[in-house]
Image (cartoon, rainbow, N blue to C red; front, side, top):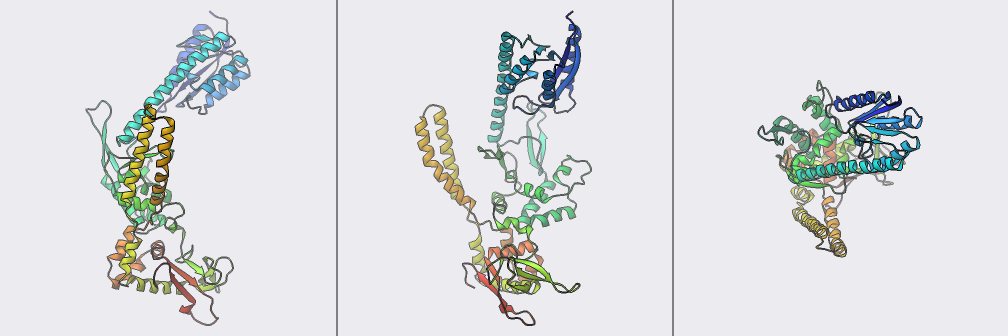
Length: 489
């Protein structure tokens, strides 16, 4: 029996879906048994459960182990295998040096004993560790290859998403499954998208869902007990903008090599609806921020006729008899009764909607199909991929690849700009207007919320000016100017 000495036990496992730490506990038991057989005293047990060591993630147990090693708390670390300590090259090199400096050796239940104070021990630790790292990297490459293959085949990754239901093939050894529509959840997604395309704001759509006590996705899928969670605007937006809604499989989300593939599951909405709803939320697009405004003419639709500044609202009058005014944001050049101005705008818009050429205005406002641009963009990307594959197969030199890339990339950038600049007209709103009898236009306008009314004014490219006027009783319609950008009045 060896002389008594104090040792530390360290255990780690990369993945533990159950969260019960059974693997870590077994490693600790095996290490304790080895220490007992050798006559060593276990001075401390350190562990990291469900944490990979390959990517350099923070491991609290390992960090504490190395800290205590530096204080002389033990002279040896007992592990089930050296791969439990290190998988990352940089972390392994630093760890070997630190343990060597403090004369701490390593003993493995399944492996050799390494005296890191000697060149041989350090060399063996590095050599064994390199094979451990290679094993992890090969596994990672295999997992990435499988993930890429699933993405290109349009197969889902992870748990079933809100809007679909999953059925597993009982005869499959690889847990093959099929995702089909969950009509109840699919109807909620379609309602969300339909409301947004009809011009409703995120806030009003969220309120509708909560008022009707529709279970949130997490509650519906059983991820929360009780199902009492409330919908948030961020949740509504996330659900509406999912590529999966249009049967598109997104791979490497947010990365430089992000790609979309046709999905193996059925679509909840059409491609046209998906493109229209994603267009509502383009960066800097006013249509995507409609829910932020509670008044018809604030935020740039109305302007000061004196200085050109945007409008805000402000109360005026005695307590109990206050009215809201549109005033100039910066200089207070003008001020006009909000209710009177909104009523005037309403009458002008209804008259504009009743004109025979209004259908032409609607048609002109529709976003172009861009089918040709999308097909051309896809073809260019295929050419770029083929050129890259030819280079990797040594059929093209690096100079030839750079020449091909230099010719194709500008065209790709141009097409992407064209697609990003679509007009993003809320299709559902336009169809509702186009199919309405002129006599019912007032009823239609009055039934819309502020967000929908604002979208129509934006669609018409209407600008309202609050002009300077002489003081006097009553509201003067001539103190409000109406401009139609690019159109006849």
